[in-house]
Image 1 (cartoon, rainbow, N blue to C red):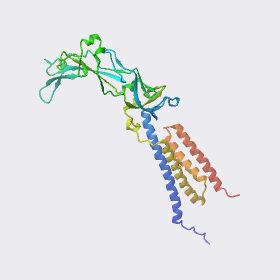
Image 2: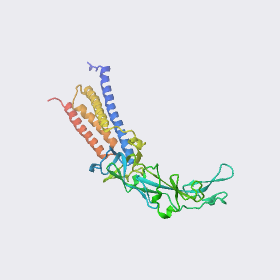
Image 3: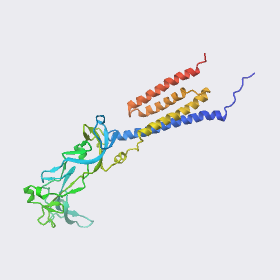
Image 4: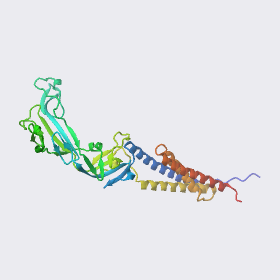
Length: 352
C-alpha cells in the first residue's frame, strides 16, 4: 500500500507565513529608513563641523559641551566697543566698518562711443585704460583705506565670540561720525555732509579726487550662531569639510534654515519610538513564522530573531559612520544569534 499523500496547504496556512514575512520586512524596512535618515543628517552635519547641541536662549558654557558644536540664540552685547584709531571714531556696536570712496571718472559704453561720468567709487579706477584718457584723469590710489574694527570683547549669552565669528556678522546700521573726536590734522581736511566726512570744499559739489568716508555698524540685535565651544568662547570648527565651520544669522533661526543642505532631522525621541515600533513589527512577523514552522508560539525565539534582524541591519548601516554605535547594534545582533540558536536546538530536541 502506497504512503499517504499530504493534503495541500490551505489558503489560511499559506497566509500565515506570508503575513509573517511581510511584517518582518516592514519592521526591517522602517528601521532602515529611520537609520538612513539619521545617518544622512549626521553626515551632512559633519561637513559643517559635527552634531549640534541646541542650547537655544540663555545658554551657559558647560564642561559637557567642550569640543561640541552648539546652536546659541541671544542678543549681542558689546563689552569693549570697536575704535577707528585713525579717525578716533568709536560706537557701541559689535563691528564698526569704515567705507572710503573717491569722486572719480568712470567710462561707460552702450554700443557707441565711450562716455564719461563722475561719481563716488569705492576703489581706484585706472583712467589710463580709458578710450579717451585725456581730460578724464583719476588720481590713483586712495590716501585712506576702508577698514573693519571689531569689538574688543563681544558676548552672546555667557559666551564670548572669536574674531572669525565677529567677521561673519552683517553691518547695516549707519553710524554718524563725531567731528569733535577727529584728530586735528583730519579735522582741517574733512567736513560733515549727509552722514559722512568729505574733503570737498563745497560738499554738495565734489571734484575728482575728493574723498568721502562713512561708517556703518552691526546692530546689537538677536542672532543665532552655530559654532564650536572652546572654553567660554565660540569658535569655528577647524575640521569642518565645508571650510567654514560656523553659521551666523540675525534672528532666531532654525538649524535647517542655517544649513539648507541638511535633511529634516527626526527628534531623537521619535527615532527611538520608530526603532521600538520596528522591533515590535519584526517580532510580530517572526512570531507568525515560528508559529507556522513549529506549530507553536515561542515567546523567546520570536523576539530573539527580531533582535537579530534589526540589530544586524542597523549595525551594518552605521559601519563607517559611527563604528562605536555600529558595534553596539552588531553586539545586540550577536546576542540575538546566541538566543536564537539555543531556542532552535531546544525546540528540535526530542522530549525526554
